[in-house]
Image (spheres, rainbow, N blue to C red):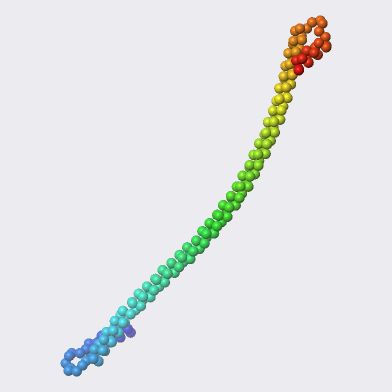
Length: 170
């Protein structure tokens, strides 16, 4: 149907065209020719131009939607990152507090072990001193007995032996 309309408009353009034989103005024919030409151009070009601009508008709309989606995704990622940062800061604070507590516990345990070791060393020292005193007393007694036995004579009695021992011990 549209092809028939275009054909009629084209034929009417040739039919109504001016030959310049008239002496008067040909404004009516020129106006009809212009309207036919404008209609023909409109008919041929309007649909592609409309579809071009519609697709261009749709493309711009799609790009804008993609940008808005990326923006909302970026905002959500930023919020997630900020929440992770705040969680990490809380964890760092908790870690610092717990490490201080653990440090105090370990320090107290080490001090308790050191105190126990000091007590053990003091006991060992006291035991060693006692052992050395006994050893020294035994050595002194042995020396005295050896001396007494080497000087032993028939006249050496218990009182003399006690006096010799008392002299060595004093």
